[in-house]
Image (cartoon, rainbow, N blue to C red):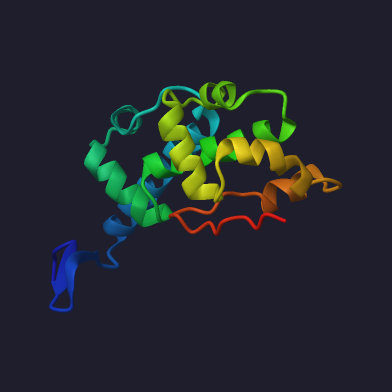
Length: 163
């Protein structure tokens, strides 16, 4: 079969065959997706949208979103919000900024959206995390604290026990 993709009756989505050009294109796409992810990691505090990210790597927004989700398990927007929430958690643990200041410092323009997404990922509101978060990492090295406080994606965070 000379086609680059083929389908079977069990899977509605096309599969890439093992042809050399298909593998080369897949590797190029992965490199572009890594550039997008790296840009999100660097510029999370700046206004970013999927259209601008896609333009930078010469992809359509829809194609970028589909390929990013296949490669990383979540959409570019979800990845961006997770990065913002991770940074917000660190700023809130410091305790010297208000929730509103942290919201804008990490690139969110809506306090309501920020608070909702924070609560979904972390399991408590930003203000509760600011109040109690520093105690949960007392005595830990910063690199360990970052790992144990990493937000959980896809609304999987259990509520924190209040003792």
